[in-house]
Length: 311
Length: 249
Image (tube, rainbow over the protein chains, first blue to last red):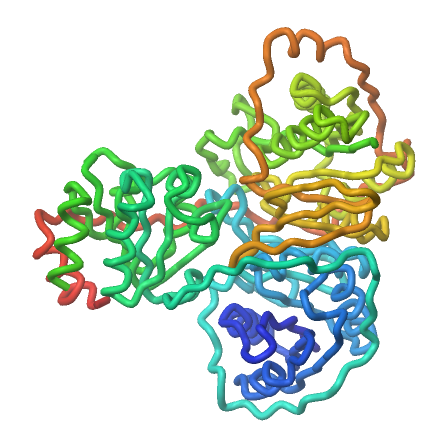
C-alpha cells in the first residue's frame, strides 16, 4: 500500500504533529511518502528525509505554496495522489490539515475522516465525536482513504535514522482565488502547547490578565507551555491560541496542571487524555476534581506561587 | 449582496451526551436539540453585514429531518429573510451536504456563503472546505474577523500559532470560529415575525443529489474513564506525590 503524508513544517523544520501523523501511517502499514510543500522548503524536505520510516520525500517548492493556501495546495495533493496511486492520504489534524485536506477529499470525491485517534485496519479507524464524549469506530468504503490525524493520540516517530530520497515535484500553480495579507503569530520562548510535556493552564478563577503571570511563572519553573480555559480566553486574560478544549487545542502532556479551572465538559474534551492531571481550585465541588489524579482544594493565589517557589 | 448560511440541528451544546447501551450511536430521544453554535455565529455575522448595509438578503438552509424547520425559524428570528429545508431522515455525510449546498448555490446565486467551521456532533470540520472546492471558489476557514471590500473579502483566521489575514475574491466561502462575534438572543417580536417568513421544503432528489454514504459506523463507545484520583492536603504533599509517586517532575 502507498501512503501519502502531507507535512506541516515551517520551511526549515518539520512540526511534531507531522511525526505523529507518520506514526499513524506506520500503523496502517505501507510505503510512506511525505510531501513537503512550501517556498524555500529545502531545509524541511531534508529534515523529512531523516524521519524514521519514510521512503520518499516529495518537495514542491513554489511561491504559490508559501502560505498553505488551500486553493493552491489541494490540487497539487490530489494530482499527486492520482499520479502515485496512493491509497491513504494523511495530514495532521491541526488548523493546517483541517484547512486544506477536505478540499483534497472533494477533488477526489472521498468522504474524509477527521481526527483519527486509532487505526483498527486499513479501512477502519477510531475517531472522537461530540467533543470526545463518545468514540466512534468507522469503516470507510472509499477506495482512497483521506484523514486527518489527532497528533496527541499517536507517539511521534523518531525524527532521525531515516534516509529517504528527496524528489522535486512540479505542477504547483496559483489559483488567484486568495492571497496572503499578513499574520500575527504568537512569539513565545515556551514550548508549543500541543506537543509540550507539561502544560499549566489557568481559568476564570485567575481573575485578570495581570494575575495570569502567576500561571506563567509556574509554567516557566516547569519548562511548561501555558494553556487556558475558554472562560479565561473569553474574559481576555490571554490570547485565544492558548485555549485548551473542544473548540481550542487538544493536549495530552505527561503532566497537566489546571489552576482555577472548574472543568466544563468543553475544557475536559481538550485535556482528559493527559497522563497526570493536577487540579488546584478553591471550590471542592468543581468537576475538574473528578478527572484529576491529584486535587488540591486551595486558593490559587496562595497555592500556585507556593508551588512555583518550592519546586 | 446575497448571503447563504447553512445551519445544522444538533444536540444542544450543554447536554451531556450519552452513548446508547447497544453501542450503535448516541441517545437523541428526548434530548434538547439546538442550532449548531458555530452556525449561530454565521447567521449573526450575516445579519450584521445586512445591518451595516453591505448585504441585502440572507437565506438560511438546512439539511435533515422535518424538525430542522425549528432550526431555520431560529435563524430567521435572528435575522435571516427566508429558509430552505432539504428534508431527509437519512444521515447525510459532509461530502453529500456539500454537494447539496452546491446545488442550492447554483440555484440561489449568493455572493458569499458563511457557515460554521464544524458541527459539534460529528466534529468533521469539512463541509465548508468541500463546498468551496466543488464551486471553484476561494475559502477562508476559522474566521475571527470579516471585512467586505469591493470584489473581495479580507478575513482574519484563527490558526494554531496565532492569526493570519487572507484576501479572498468573492464569491467565496467563509467558515466561522468562536470569536467572530457573540450571537444575539432573538427577541420575542422577532420570533413571532420569523413564523411568517417564507420557508421552502425540498428533497435531495429535487437537487439531483443521491445520498450514498461511504462511512459505516461499526460502534460508538464511551471514552475510557479516568480512574479516580486523590485529594492532597497541601502544596508540599502535591510536590512529593508528583516527584515520587507519579514521577512526572
